[in-house]
Image (tube, rainbow over all chains, first blue to last red; front, side, top):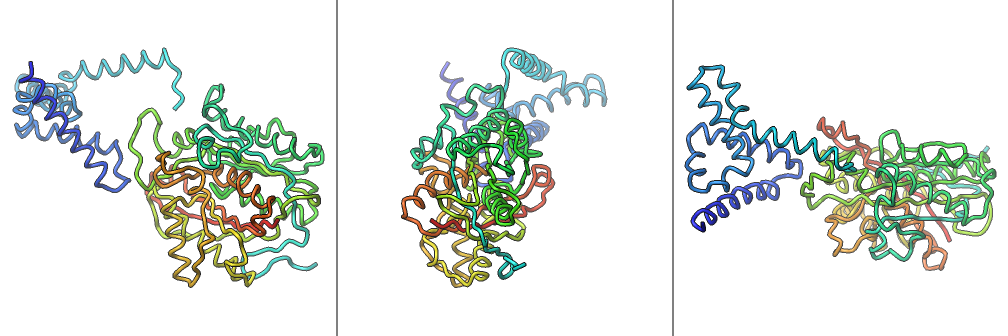
Length: 120
Length: 334
């Protein structure tokens, strides 16, 4: 078990360190939203270059849970769908591959908004 | 008729207004700060049982306005104007608080400088013979300001080290033509100064040149020096802004150690607000509590309060526009 946990902890932690350094070393106009977009697109680009898949194999959830993992899943899904169905797959494959994540976010977002009355 | 205007921007009142009463209501964080004991009322939390933070801010201002009226024991029908302002769009905190007051209402917007602005305009109304009593009040609320100007608090985004913590607080004063109490004897209305600062997380830097400009013009107009004041205090420059303003004044040959800032005084370092406090409520509650107490105790004979305002909107900031800033000064004498 530890041979999986330790790489996941180290790689996941290092990805977060990059995010924290981006917050601390840039101007305040660089917001958490910028980090979000940068990590998702960064993950997609690394995935397209074939660099993210080895990281997932090594670190598992340490690489798939951070936002860059979402970008990786989008790119991977799009590439696989292109192989199966041609160019149209580039548009459908990404969302298909990440459908669980997106649907869970919508479902729980909806659920929480019904149960609670947000004030912020 | 004699003109009361002196120099470029200053008016000296022939009949100074008298501060008959004051009232301040603050949130729990301000209550725990170094000035906690000087406030009239401390809420146990920032919402105090209200359905939203916006309603809470409006109620807080209502409590401050009612509190000042009660302390003065002046009948409401002898109060001719209510001057109030806050930070929210269309100054809703003031509009809603004014519903229950039944006093002719003039809404003012000077962002965080609104307290000093309302004291200046209120005294003009009294000195001009347009009013017997004028009630002035402002409010700000940390959570409503975060929602409107920054991001939802639930997001829990990291705050930059130059950012300031909006004070949850409302302060109010009742000004009269005569009676016992400190008097507002002069006012300098500021010009808009904009040096191109676009970072809304660094409003102290945007406002410092405006505050320095108003102080310089005030002293020049009245031919006074900083030593003529026991205290020169800006509204909410914060730790970084106060340093910048001191630098600007030093370049103009003015160096004095009786210069402070309400945004520096209201929280202590352990409260981790980064660059200090901001918001309309900041200068209002520090003045209505701490400073008035010291004036009444005779510790300060003459104080210059310089409200500092950053006059951008959330839309203009998102579009990359710079922050127009202003400083309004009032002289209060014991």
